[in-house]
Length: 168
Image (cartoon, rainbow, N blue to C red):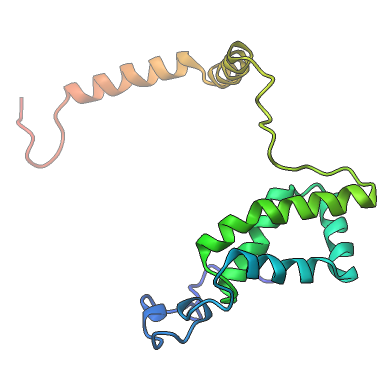
């Protein structure tokens, strides 16, 4: 693949998304499922297919958190006009429970995405970690070079230069 620094003229024009007719996009029309119960039935029907289960297991084995998968599924449902955003947010916990049940029945370990990775760390250990990182950054900087540069620039400032400078 050749990478070029030339500008691409295939990009959308600013404001182009505002030129379509109102209702021409799936998310601009009324949702296909208006209640949480209807939305759950739709997703449960899809999630019980053998193809979905196999793909879900593959994704969870790669280490993708269940929260990420559930949010992605509900967002695509919104984009397709299946349900509204608020209905999707209400359905996410149920989607997660179903996916965790499928993963447990398949016997795989999964990351639920609900645990805080910094929960077991105390404030002191976090501060110590960042202190070590900042100390490494400070060690990279040579302070003597910075002092020498400053004195040279101060000397240069004493001598006026330029077309409008006063002559001594």
